[in-house]
Length: 490
Figure 1 (cartoon, rainbow, N blue to C red):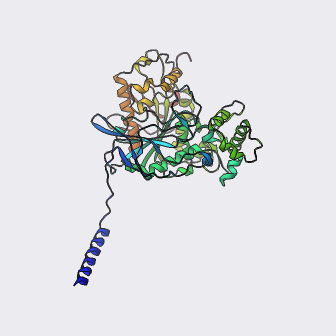
Figure 2: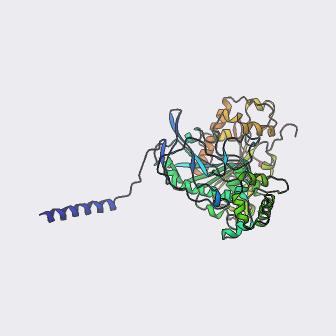
Figure 3: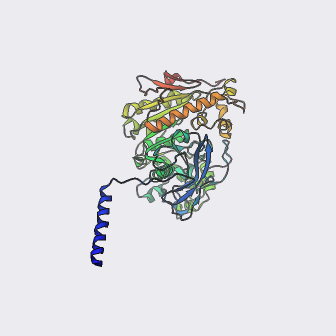
């Protein structure tokens, strides 16, 4: 009898398993709250309420192991998992750079800096919101993604998940050296900062669904040096499949043919850094360089005699060709691109933006969209002054009015002829920010920045030469090269 019961029970269990196997698999859905479970462990962030909507902010999540000691000048390594809930309510370190920057760099600076921040208003993991991964400016030598300009509630409330990334900078991120090239096994060195960015995108692919994001709908974007970082990924074969759209804001100079750093030139600069540190004839030069203080390395690289160019290295691995030649030959990632600059940026609007737009629109199947950001707050507009480098950022991220009076923006404002610390923002600035966020979010969602009822943004071609003028009103205009306006007195 017992054998008969056991046999019947086994048949019942087998039947249930057959039914489950035949049924369609349902994705596991979890709530997104101030505690989220990543592949490496749980993180606890901050939850704030804005407009009746809860927004979760996570700061300082590691996406790679600290690149210190033996891992200095090597590809980023996996994160060591943790068992407790990791606190993600404080900013991480800024990457190694010169202290006392005129642009307001402050706080802890360290080599241990491979962290990112996530801001999301998603309620559940099933929402699959578009992901916007932002790379900060500062050339490739300074800056940080740790700023409320980039990590506030406004843009995530447009239905996207925002990620901001810190990556190695200056000589810690871009120094090449013959010994490093030999050690790599690929005959290549430099570009460690870009390898960090690739690692951050791999983290997004593996973890962003837990924050309500869609790993198959990722936009990368950056301003100034962040545009350089974006172009590095657009043209690197190592970033294949990790992003699906790109925006370059006032950071297109890398498209020019002369912006090339060969491996030979980069290695020579690395040898000069070693010489400045007194390691010309060291028996084990790499061990000495890895034992040196990062502050001394940064100082040596900044010496005029050393002449270290913090730039992407055409190394045959991360970057097989220059950015210009890669796009000219159609070897870049074929994704929708938005590119533009601000009205007071002559070189960008007259040369770099049209060059990048022309090459992309002629060699990629995906569409290219061009803009000129021209809006200036009332207090500066009446001086007069014109839209300067970086002015679009508080509008892109909706951080009005505080973003307009940040140390970085006030430092940069002189470039537009704005000689007062009070921009006097008003309701119009909030409207321009709303319009800008809606277009950027639309591009993240669909690859087209048009917004029904707001603007129909035409794709750019060299023949139609059409772009969007972002001012007090949105306008479709023609002639991007002639859209520059000189600051007063220039």
